[in-house]
Length: 250
Image (tube, rainbow, N blue to C red; front, top):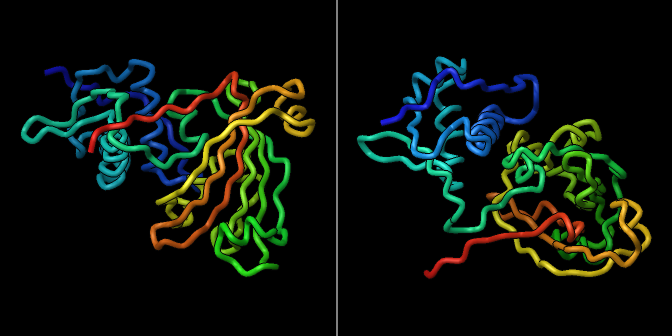
Protein backbone atom coordinates (compact mmCIF):
# COMPACT_ATOMS: atom_id res chain seq x y z
CA UNK A 1 0.00 0.00 0.00
CA UNK A 2 1.59 3.25 -1.16
CA UNK A 3 1.31 5.96 1.46
CA UNK A 4 1.27 9.66 0.59
CA UNK A 5 4.30 11.44 2.03
CA UNK A 6 3.28 13.62 4.96
CA UNK A 7 6.02 16.13 4.05
CA UNK A 8 3.92 17.30 1.08
CA UNK A 9 4.43 21.07 0.91
CA UNK A 10 1.21 22.87 1.86
CA UNK A 11 0.96 26.67 1.75
CA UNK A 12 -1.93 28.51 3.40
CA UNK A 13 -2.46 32.13 4.36
CA UNK A 14 -3.59 32.21 7.99
CA UNK A 15 -4.41 35.93 7.73
CA UNK A 16 -6.79 35.38 4.79
CA UNK A 17 -10.57 35.57 5.28
CA UNK A 18 -10.82 32.28 3.34
CA UNK A 19 -11.26 29.37 5.79
CA UNK A 20 -8.17 27.20 6.35
CA UNK A 21 -9.98 24.00 5.40
CA UNK A 22 -10.92 25.56 2.06
CA UNK A 23 -7.34 26.65 1.38
CA UNK A 24 -6.07 23.19 2.34
CA UNK A 25 -8.59 21.51 0.05
CA UNK A 26 -7.45 23.76 -2.82
CA UNK A 27 -3.80 22.85 -2.14
CA UNK A 28 -4.63 19.13 -2.15
CA UNK A 29 -6.60 19.51 -5.38
CA UNK A 30 -3.58 21.18 -6.95
CA UNK A 31 -1.25 18.43 -5.72
CA UNK A 32 -3.51 15.79 -7.27
CA UNK A 33 -3.74 17.70 -10.56
CA UNK A 34 0.07 18.03 -10.68
CA UNK A 35 0.66 14.37 -9.81
CA UNK A 36 2.33 15.07 -6.46
CA UNK A 37 -0.49 13.06 -4.89
CA UNK A 38 -0.58 10.04 -7.16
CA UNK A 39 -3.69 8.09 -8.06
CA UNK A 40 -3.85 4.90 -5.98
CA UNK A 41 -1.85 6.34 -3.08
CA UNK A 42 -3.22 6.56 0.46
CA UNK A 43 -3.21 9.56 2.77
CA UNK A 44 -1.66 9.24 6.19
CA UNK A 45 -4.15 9.45 9.04
CA UNK A 46 -5.67 12.78 9.98
CA UNK A 47 -3.78 13.10 13.25
CA UNK A 48 -0.41 12.74 11.49
CA UNK A 49 -1.40 15.16 8.74
CA UNK A 50 -2.71 17.71 11.26
CA UNK A 51 0.59 17.58 13.14
CA UNK A 52 2.75 17.91 10.03
CA UNK A 53 0.67 20.73 8.53
CA UNK A 54 0.18 22.47 11.90
CA UNK A 55 -3.59 22.50 11.61
CA UNK A 56 -6.41 21.18 13.75
CA UNK A 57 -7.75 17.72 13.06
CA UNK A 58 -11.26 19.07 12.25
CA UNK A 59 -9.71 21.39 9.63
CA UNK A 60 -7.87 18.49 7.98
CA UNK A 61 -10.95 16.26 8.17
CA UNK A 62 -13.17 18.88 6.53
CA UNK A 63 -10.67 19.54 3.73
CA UNK A 64 -10.42 15.81 3.03
CA UNK A 65 -14.21 15.51 2.99
CA UNK A 66 -14.36 18.27 0.36
CA UNK A 67 -12.21 16.13 -1.92
CA UNK A 68 -14.20 12.99 -1.10
CA UNK A 69 -17.36 14.84 -2.13
CA UNK A 70 -15.60 15.98 -5.32
CA UNK A 71 -14.65 12.43 -6.28
CA UNK A 72 -10.90 12.96 -5.87
CA UNK A 73 -10.52 10.88 -2.71
CA UNK A 74 -12.39 7.87 -1.38
CA UNK A 75 -12.60 6.59 2.20
CA UNK A 76 -12.31 2.83 2.67
CA UNK A 77 -13.20 1.42 6.06
CA UNK A 78 -10.23 -0.35 7.62
CA UNK A 79 -7.96 0.73 4.77
CA UNK A 80 -7.77 4.53 4.75
CA UNK A 81 -8.31 7.44 2.38
CA UNK A 82 -7.17 6.80 -1.18
CA UNK A 83 -6.45 9.16 -4.06
CA UNK A 84 -8.70 8.18 -6.95
CA UNK A 85 -8.85 11.41 -9.00
CA UNK A 86 -12.16 10.29 -10.47
CA UNK A 87 -13.43 12.93 -12.88
CA UNK A 88 -16.91 11.39 -12.96
CA UNK A 89 -19.03 12.93 -10.23
CA UNK A 90 -22.49 11.78 -9.19
CA UNK A 91 -23.87 15.33 -9.12
CA UNK A 92 -23.07 18.82 -10.30
CA UNK A 93 -21.49 20.71 -7.40
CA UNK A 94 -22.03 24.38 -6.67
CA UNK A 95 -18.69 26.06 -7.30
CA UNK A 96 -17.49 29.40 -8.59
CA UNK A 97 -15.21 29.98 -11.57
CA UNK A 98 -12.46 30.94 -9.11
CA UNK A 99 -12.88 27.56 -7.37
CA UNK A 100 -12.75 25.71 -10.69
CA UNK A 101 -9.60 27.50 -11.86
CA UNK A 102 -7.83 26.88 -8.54
CA UNK A 103 -8.68 23.19 -8.82
CA UNK A 104 -6.82 22.90 -12.12
CA UNK A 105 -4.03 25.36 -11.26
CA UNK A 106 -5.53 27.93 -13.61
CA UNK A 107 -3.77 30.88 -11.90
CA UNK A 108 -6.96 32.97 -11.51
CA UNK A 109 -6.71 36.74 -11.21
CA UNK A 110 -9.45 39.34 -11.01
CA UNK A 111 -10.03 42.91 -12.13
CA UNK A 112 -12.88 44.61 -10.29
CA UNK A 113 -14.79 46.92 -12.61
CA UNK A 114 -17.68 47.89 -10.32
CA UNK A 115 -18.44 47.38 -6.64
CA UNK A 116 -21.25 49.55 -5.32
CA UNK A 117 -24.72 49.72 -3.82
CA UNK A 118 -27.50 50.17 -6.36
CA UNK A 119 -31.29 50.01 -6.56
CA UNK A 120 -32.34 46.56 -7.77
CA UNK A 121 -34.16 46.49 -11.10
CA UNK A 122 -37.21 44.32 -11.74
CA UNK A 123 -35.22 41.22 -12.70
CA UNK A 124 -32.89 41.37 -9.70
CA UNK A 125 -35.72 42.17 -7.28
CA UNK A 126 -37.67 39.15 -8.51
CA UNK A 127 -34.60 36.92 -8.40
CA UNK A 128 -33.78 37.87 -4.82
CA UNK A 129 -37.44 38.00 -3.71
CA UNK A 130 -37.03 41.65 -2.69
CA UNK A 131 -39.46 44.53 -2.91
CA UNK A 132 -39.03 46.87 -5.86
CA UNK A 133 -36.71 49.72 -4.96
CA UNK A 134 -34.61 47.61 -2.59
CA UNK A 135 -30.88 48.32 -2.33
CA UNK A 136 -28.43 45.58 -3.28
CA UNK A 137 -24.67 45.30 -3.76
CA UNK A 138 -23.60 45.06 -7.41
CA UNK A 139 -20.20 43.75 -8.43
CA UNK A 140 -18.76 43.44 -11.91
CA UNK A 141 -15.47 41.61 -12.32
CA UNK A 142 -13.29 40.35 -15.15
CA UNK A 143 -11.76 36.96 -14.39
CA UNK A 144 -8.45 36.05 -16.01
CA UNK A 145 -6.63 32.72 -16.17
CA UNK A 146 -2.89 32.77 -16.81
CA UNK A 147 -3.32 36.35 -18.01
CA UNK A 148 -6.07 35.55 -20.52
CA UNK A 149 -9.44 37.30 -20.16
CA UNK A 150 -11.93 34.50 -19.63
CA UNK A 151 -15.17 35.84 -18.20
CA UNK A 152 -17.12 38.90 -17.10
CA UNK A 153 -18.98 38.20 -13.85
CA UNK A 154 -21.88 40.45 -12.84
CA UNK A 155 -23.47 39.74 -9.46
CA UNK A 156 -26.17 41.35 -7.32
CA UNK A 157 -26.11 40.38 -3.64
CA UNK A 158 -28.46 41.19 -0.80
CA UNK A 159 -27.13 43.71 1.69
CA UNK A 160 -27.04 41.05 4.43
CA UNK A 161 -25.06 38.64 2.27
CA UNK A 162 -22.54 41.21 1.03
CA UNK A 163 -21.91 42.70 4.47
CA UNK A 164 -18.67 44.68 4.47
CA UNK A 165 -17.32 43.01 1.33
CA UNK A 166 -14.50 45.13 -0.13
CA UNK A 167 -12.98 45.60 -3.55
CA UNK A 168 -9.62 44.40 -2.21
CA UNK A 169 -11.18 41.14 -1.04
CA UNK A 170 -12.81 40.61 -4.44
CA UNK A 171 -9.47 41.06 -6.20
CA UNK A 172 -7.75 38.35 -4.18
CA UNK A 173 -10.51 35.78 -3.61
CA UNK A 174 -13.50 34.05 -5.14
CA UNK A 175 -16.93 35.39 -4.19
CA UNK A 176 -18.18 32.10 -2.78
CA UNK A 177 -15.08 31.68 -0.62
CA UNK A 178 -15.62 35.16 0.79
CA UNK A 179 -19.24 34.35 1.59
CA UNK A 180 -18.23 31.11 3.31
CA UNK A 181 -15.69 33.02 5.40
CA UNK A 182 -18.59 35.12 6.69
CA UNK A 183 -20.63 32.04 7.58
CA UNK A 184 -22.89 32.31 4.51
CA UNK A 185 -22.94 29.01 2.62
CA UNK A 186 -23.91 28.87 -1.06
CA UNK A 187 -26.10 25.78 -1.12
CA UNK A 188 -28.60 25.65 -3.97
CA UNK A 189 -28.85 27.38 -7.31
CA UNK A 190 -31.04 27.45 -10.36
CA UNK A 191 -29.11 28.42 -13.46
CA UNK A 192 -29.83 28.92 -17.12
CA UNK A 193 -27.06 28.34 -19.66
CA UNK A 194 -27.22 29.97 -23.06
CA UNK A 195 -25.20 31.60 -25.81
CA UNK A 196 -25.04 34.92 -27.63
CA UNK A 197 -22.59 37.07 -29.52
CA UNK A 198 -20.45 39.74 -27.88
CA UNK A 199 -21.64 43.33 -28.01
CA UNK A 200 -19.19 46.24 -27.84
CA UNK A 201 -18.98 46.30 -24.00
CA UNK A 202 -18.30 42.61 -23.43
CA UNK A 203 -16.05 42.43 -26.49
CA UNK A 204 -13.87 45.20 -25.07
CA UNK A 205 -13.76 43.66 -21.58
CA UNK A 206 -12.81 40.22 -22.92
CA UNK A 207 -10.46 41.53 -25.64
CA UNK A 208 -12.60 39.89 -28.35
CA UNK A 209 -14.02 41.11 -31.64
CA UNK A 210 -17.62 42.28 -31.65
CA UNK A 211 -19.76 39.31 -32.64
CA UNK A 212 -17.52 36.69 -31.02
CA UNK A 213 -19.45 33.76 -29.46
CA UNK A 214 -20.10 33.94 -25.72
CA UNK A 215 -21.37 31.34 -23.26
CA UNK A 216 -23.90 32.86 -20.85
CA UNK A 217 -24.96 31.74 -17.38
CA UNK A 218 -27.76 33.28 -15.33
CA UNK A 219 -27.80 31.93 -11.76
CA UNK A 220 -29.99 32.56 -8.71
CA UNK A 221 -28.37 31.20 -5.58
CA UNK A 222 -29.69 30.40 -2.09
CA UNK A 223 -27.90 29.78 1.19
CA UNK A 224 -28.50 26.81 3.48
CA UNK A 225 -31.50 28.52 5.09
CA UNK A 226 -33.20 28.81 1.70
CA UNK A 227 -32.70 32.59 1.55
CA UNK A 228 -31.92 33.97 -1.90
CA UNK A 229 -28.66 35.86 -1.64
CA UNK A 230 -27.20 36.28 -5.12
CA UNK A 231 -28.21 36.80 -8.73
CA UNK A 232 -25.42 36.32 -11.24
CA UNK A 233 -25.22 37.13 -14.95
CA UNK A 234 -21.93 35.81 -16.32
CA UNK A 235 -20.49 35.70 -19.81
CA UNK A 236 -17.55 33.54 -20.91
CA UNK A 237 -15.27 33.54 -23.93
CA UNK A 238 -16.67 30.45 -25.68
CA UNK A 239 -13.35 29.74 -27.36
CA UNK A 240 -11.62 29.35 -23.99
CA UNK A 241 -14.25 27.96 -21.64
CA UNK A 242 -16.77 25.13 -21.66
CA UNK A 243 -18.96 23.42 -19.06
CA UNK A 244 -18.91 19.71 -18.38
CA UNK A 245 -21.24 17.74 -16.13
CA UNK A 246 -21.74 14.09 -15.32
CA UNK A 247 -25.18 12.58 -15.88
CA UNK A 248 -26.07 9.35 -14.11
CA UNK A 249 -29.17 7.20 -14.11
CA UNK A 250 -31.23 7.62 -10.95
